[in-house]
Image (cartoon, rainbow, N blue to C red; front, side, top):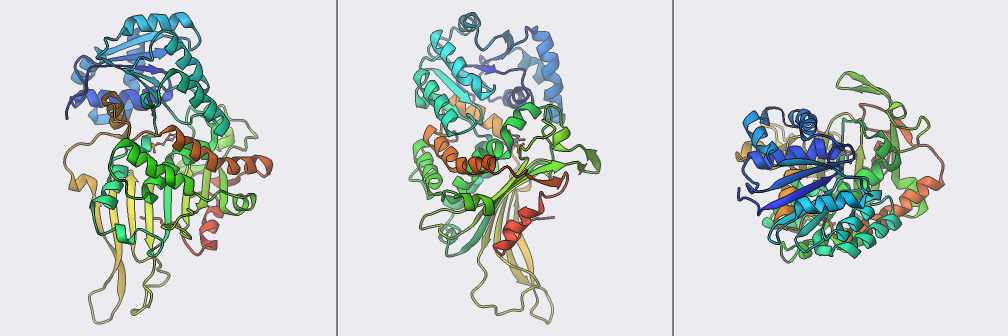
Amino acid sequence: MASTPPFDIVFFGGTGDLALRKLMPALYQAHKYGALDPDGRIFALGRKALSIEDYLDLLLQWVKQALGDDYDEPSWASFTSRLQFHKLEANNADDYKALASVLNAPSDRVTVCYLATAPDLFTTICGHLADVGLNHSNVRLVLEKPLGHDLTSSNAINEAVGHCFTENQIYRIDHYLGKESVQNLMAIRFGNTLFEPLWRREWIDNIQITIAEELGVEERGEFYDRTGALRDMLQSHLLQLLCIVAMEPPASLSEDAVRDEKLKVLKSLKPFSTEDVLTRTVRGQYRNGAINGAPVVAYREEKHVAHDSNTETFVALQAELANWRWAGVPFFLRTGKRLQERVAEIVINFRDVPHALFPMPLGLHSANRLVIRLQPQESVRLYFLAKEPGDAMNLQSTYLNMDFHTTFKARWADAYERLLLDVIRGRLALFMRRDEQAQAWTWVEPILECWSNYAASPKTYTAGSWGPAASSALLSRAGFLWHEET
Ligand code: BG6
C-alpha cells in the first residue's frame, strides 16, 4: 500500500470511547501494514493530565481487545514512538497555544484535527484552532457524527465551523461509507451492465436496509439517552446507504460528482406527514432479555440512562423516493441495539415473474433478490429459483454467493482505517458535504417532532429479539417480510 504524505494527526477526545475503540486501533493497523509515512505523528488530547505511559497503558488494553490476533508487540512498540499525549481543556486558550507550538507544522505537512468529542464542543474548538492559526490551508478538520441534534443545531455548527475552515478542509465522517462492501455496491451497480437496467421501479419490488447490533449502549448511556437510534444511526448511516443504493450513476468518481448524486436522492425523499410518522415509523426500546444466552438488562437500567427514558433504541420506517426511477418502491430501513444478531445488509427484492409457469414453493415471494452483506462477513448473494433434480418440475430457492474473504485474499482496511488514510491523503469523496447533511436532518425532523409531540412511549422489545412486533407488522401491512437469513 502506498504510504501517506508526512502528517500530524490530533485527536480531540483522545481518551474517549471512539478514539480508544476505533480510531487508534485503526491507525495502529495502518502503521503495522506500512500505510503511514514514517514521519507521521499522532497526538491524543484529553482533559486529564495523563503521562504518556499511563495513556499507552490505557490504549493498549483497547487495541488488544479490538484487534485480537492482529496485535503484535514489535509493531506496537514502533507505533507508540509516533504517539504523544497532551492535556487540553476545550475552552482554555493557553492549551491551544501550547498545541500550536508542538505542531508548528511546516507548510508541506498535513495536519489533521479530528474532533472525536461531543458536537457541542465543535464550535469552541474550531474557534480556538483558528485563533492560533491552526486553520491554515494544510489543516484538515474531521467532524464526527451526529453533527448537532437537529437541523438548527447542525446548521449553527456548520456555520460557525465554516467561519474558521473552508468547505474543502472539512471531512464530515460517516464510517459506513468506508466499509469495503459499500464501495463494492458502487462497483456492482456501475461496473456491470447486468444490474443497472433492472435497478428501478419496473423490476424492483422493495428494498430493505438493516443495521442490527447485539451491543447495548455500553459506556455511552449519557450520550445515547440524549440521542437515540434515529439520530445516532438512521439520520447518518442508513440514509447514506440508501443514497448509494438509489443514486443515479455519477458522471465520474470525483468527490462532487458522487456527492451531487447523493444529494439528489436525499432531496427526493418524500417528506413525512404526521400521519406518515404514525403509520410508517416504529420506535422501540429494549427490555431485559438475553444475548447469546447471557442475560442483559433493560435499556432503562443501563448506566447513565434515565429510569423513565423514552429514548428509542430501535427504529424501523418505510421511506419512499419521489422520482422517476423509484416512485412507488418502498424502502424499509431498520436499526436497533440488543437485537438477535449483529448484521448489516442491503436487500434488493426484485418483482415476481408476470406469469407463474411453475408451481411456486409455498410462501415464496421475491424469488430474485440481491443481498449485500456489510457485516459481520462481507458477501454478495444473488438468489434465484432452480429446478430440483428429479421428475417433477419442483423449483427451489438457491443463490450464487460471492464471499469477500474467499474471493479476495489481500487484506483490506477497516472503515475507519480507510477513511483516516483518505483524510491524510486529502480525498473527500467518502465524506459528507454540508448540504447533504442538512438535507438528511431536514428529512428526519418531522419524525423527531412528531415523536416528541405524541407522548406515547416507544414499543418495548425483548433484548435478543428482532425488535418490536410492530416492525414486522409495518412490512406485512405492505405485503412483505423482513429478509432474515440463516
Ligand atoms: C456508530 C454509532 O456511529 O456506529 C454506534 O454511534 C454504533 O451507536 C456504531 O454502535 C455501529 O458501527 P459498526 O461499524 O460497528 O456497525
